[in-house]
Image (cartoon, rainbow, N blue to C red; front, top):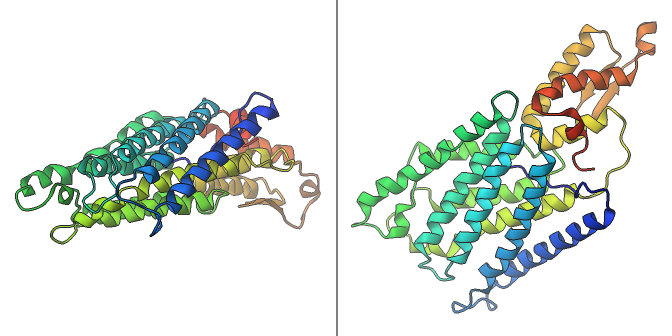
Length: 334
């Protein structure tokens, strides 16, 4: 999933301030729902903890709608479709949540489909380049099929296990999904969205634990379906606040490199970095692209001394064009 949201591109700072305030309000609701689940504060007769996260998830859906508009003309826009679907499924799962050990089988089912939609969004980012980004994002729907296969197999176990135990994974599916989670989350760990990535990774890993071939009857799992939707909500709210944080004035080169690096993640950024440095070596430029920007080396010739950074920016723009309109990418997070 794309852990980012930026200020409204209306040119009005007041709109950005309002959006920031709404996100802080959603974050407060999310944290309050966790506090109410502490021992001594929670009550089986109250549905408050789950219900508090629902309006915060609607804030996240609004943030991703803004992101989808900002990403128009780029290859990341298709991934936001899966992300918004995951939010809607999380809202539905929390609306059916029951705060007791038996849980609600439908809450578990919709949480599991939310889990698969998140994976589809994360994998969509790994294939987000042109041409073919929409076809790749559609192909990521295969995760829904793979993840629901155990449910179909579990139908034959209904006589021996509870409905909750139909949500189970056997090898090799559990190892495959663990690898997908690692690939999707680690893609954003080196970026400014490190903390949101960790939060989302915790939710995904815990949900995978709940469905990892539980031994015998496991009614206790029903009490913890809320963890993934809660982590998803917290991840998106924190990512939105990080993205809305004002950045210092950047050089023309960094105006392209930093937004691209943070939005597409390490997988694509390292590939572009490698191709740029190959061009730098071929043209005998006195600079090399590192993760945080250009690193100037000692000049060897007069041509090196006269190197112009605008030339480096134009070269980077050539490589970035495969991912979308350069002007739109450079305006992300601004």
